[in-house]
Image (tube, rainbow, N blue to C red; front, top):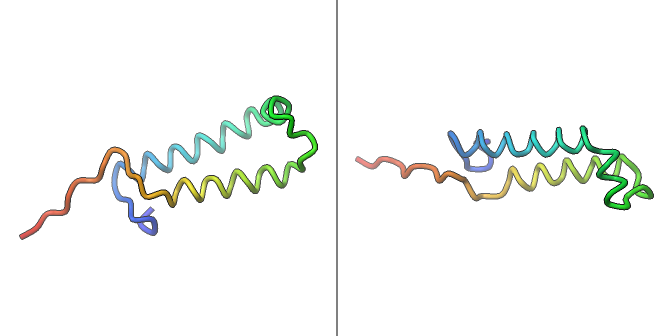
Length: 73
């Protein structure tokens, strides 16, 4: 995730969050569509939005836990 300014543990955590969201959607897609009343929205549209959400989450500059301060000197 160097393109988003993250390094180390923060980047791995963010990647795990994105994968978890994508897997959760795919596993529970039928239930989520029914529960959300989204049956009239094409699946391609819903899946495209999931991909956009992953990109937004990846680009959000909030590393947690915080990255250590760079060493000086």
